[in-house]
Image 1 (tube, rainbow, N blue to C red):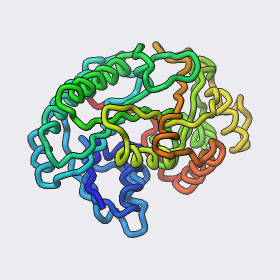
Image 2: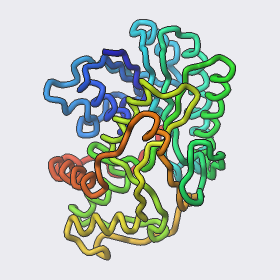
Image 3: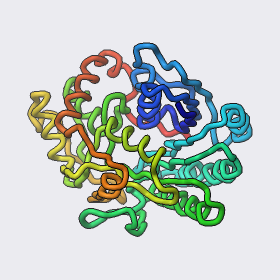
Image 4: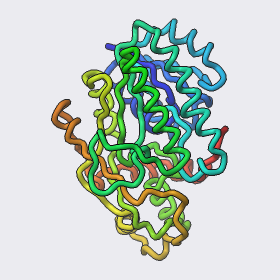
Length: 330
């Protein structure tokens, strides 16, 4: 059993990772700047015996770093996995300073403290392929950064800062960049749960730019499995891509959902203009993770969407009563 500090525990990936850790009897402390959200979005609360072995603290890294230091000293984590970031690409154009504050300045202050903590064996920084910008074909972990939005710039800047800490202080950082993650418990402003819910409710789904951008989608269970392998066995200073070897356009993805929910494509979709700075393609080659850490994805896109649809159907009355759009918190 190991002690994990999970930063960003309210996030889809963070809460799912906590669920995975608790199933394996690890001790977990989760922090988030907001109080715990509705349990339909917190997979660790779905466990039969509840979140035993888990402690939650509401902490805003931007404003409560001293409080977080106190919790860290008490808990003495061996592993820190950081999912916290100001997300949402399109919205980052509106008040970019909020993205830079949270994703760069606040993070640098945190890392400058963490590098002094002797108990930490590994710091896993959950980054994003958005840092690469739009790419041509499959890319490996050494692909150059060319971010095209304030969100992507902020994430790339933080990654470069952490690399400098690794080189200067041997800070035990390892990076992950995952393809488009989806699954049960994901917020409704993301394409797959949103399309599934709108199909069930008879609502129109906006398809930006006609849905011609190409992505690789990976189920959250495969991502949590990979993240834990990287935490335990990843080489410090290295980056690992977490991705399937399959691709799909957003348009074809929505068409698959229409077929699965037995609704005509034209009844669900409303085509709109593309968003500013949208990357048409970024495809991550995950050979390194597969070969070095013996990982492989197990859940196909069709099977994963069916699992997510079951979650939507089981929680339909609850989900339709909750906000369906992203709400920015500075």
